[in-house]
Length: 445
Image (tube, rainbow, N blue to C red):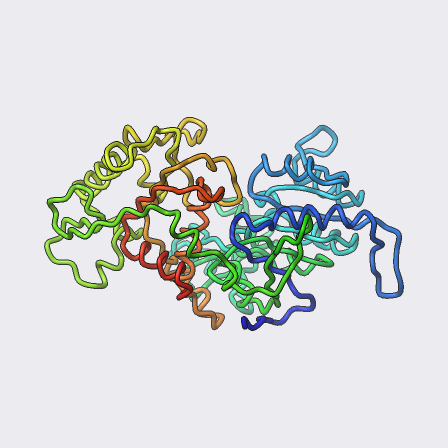
């Protein structure tokens, strides 16, 4: 039996952790529609007031889906006359007690005053997929030292950055906004991070997070670091209704799904095979280097010939091994190297117009736009940023990099036709990633 983990906040975050297609979003829509016939429970009785929701989703097209599928009047914040920015409109909707459907990008911009208003008005948060709760702020150590030395900033308890100079109008004005929102942390004097304020979760009456493999994700580590309690559930369909059940990954059809994946395996470790998925131009590769092949560090140090070989491998795979039309392919790698790896089969639009290519961002989640794609390539070996690892270590949280990696890989796989229980061709050239996927299928992860 899986033990529920509680990490210390007033209320408990409800994490609905279920494999893609299990019905998480359908359960959420059902929960919203059921609320119409319920009274809101208060400390001293009941109120006839309609429950208010904020529904957060990664994509704009999902916003429309939620509006269409629910029976309450969700409003999407817009930049409109009389309110100014989307954020201003959001704040106005809160003051009016409206239910809101919005994107992760807007949600992360909520300031403390808005979160206080949310708490006062009494909202339920439903978050489809995890939020981006941690980002490294781009600044050098010398600039950090300069700002501290000039008393522009100070560093308080737990590394919180405090802004001191009210007259400042220089290039770090954006840092001032983050610091004044209590969102900026300096780690060991060398790295600065923006973190989502914990008030973003504390301000709600109830919080539901819809995701898969939560314990392998940054938001889980963030909760642990901030002593935020969470309880994990799964979802199960009974008749035409969806129910929350005790979280138990052993119920997941992992083996059946894994068997639908036609994963390219290359047993030839020599350089003669152009599709050798362990290709590396270095003559001798030790175990540590082999484990790190196709990681961010590997890409940054790769030779022109290495990158050319991967490019050729991709083209050959989709053209000759699993002959696939371009509109049935989706592929990914780290963004900086996509222009180098693009070819006649793997398209990449330099203006980031995804409608004109078949590239999918490596962190894509909660989109069904590629559910008809029958072949994919995942050209990356996922590790956590060392600065992020050290950040969590400061809070006593040890990141499980294998869970992190396989969680991201599975999320990407489920953008394709496997989400409809259809076979899918997979080119995953990083041996570590293939191994982790097999371990996941066998419940070793």
